[in-house]
Image (cartoon, rainbow, N blue to C red; front, side, top):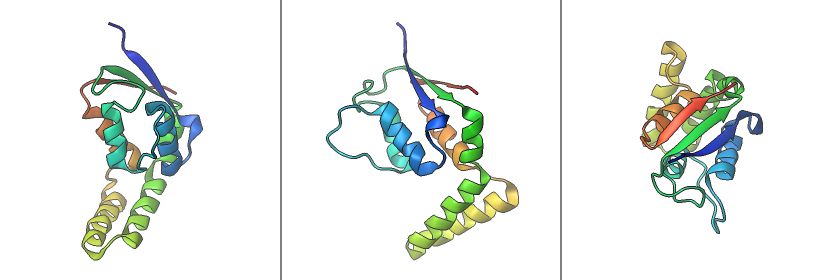
Length: 132
């Protein structure tokens, strides 16, 4: 059986919010409600069942212009994301995001792109390929 191929186009976004718009475009179809624009919602959409492919149906996911996305969702974007999370979250979450920002800065920890790729890798039904 041939797997459906779905393509994320790195030319269609330049930050995390527009990445979520691209994900909505390629992973959902004919929804009468708005998806969440966060990493948990992204994880849920990868499971399927949002009008493009069935729940945990095997698919092939291609990420085009991946090298652009490496820059767009890299170190600087991740720093800004953590800084925003620190400023908008309640006290109990601020320390978590402060620690994550420190780890990113001091130890070159996961960028947004790394986090997204980790989420994709957790889905056994997805065959992933990055293309430039």
